[in-house]
Image 1 (cartoon, helix red, strand yellow):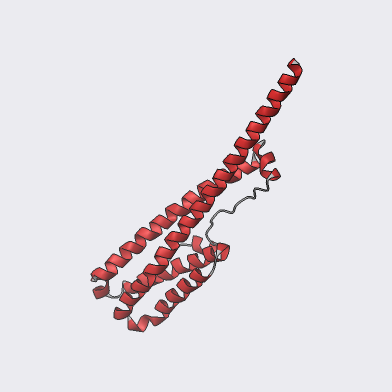
Image 2: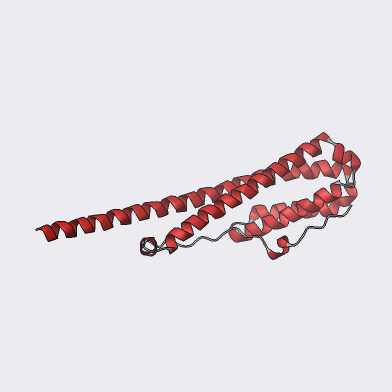
Length: 182
């Protein structure tokens, strides 16, 4: 009788551990989904701001249409993709925006324009928020991946098909120093 009680207690403890591990994995997966959705919201905000910025610059820099068209093209490409392709396109968009601001430096009247300065500040705020959202996403993914890879929770993860998530990483070309010339 005592042996049966001990066995039942062990089974109950294992069951409770399994439920707890499963719930933790679900919560971490949901936090990762939420973090990814947050990044998408910031990308949408940036995408909505870009046409206003381009129109403001257009008024001052009519002959810089190549740079302006590159920004619009990169924005449209980033908006139409999803997943890993979108992250790469967003990196290209960041590069195009950097070139746009370098062009803007050649126009003193534009640099002093309050609309342009406001849009530039909004974009800088969004870029900072995006960077923080990406860091948060990567931290959640690290915690989730750790949980599904360490023993004994890896048993529950494999049993219920919890898959490893990918980090947001930058392209090798984005690791290079950006050169701005005036």
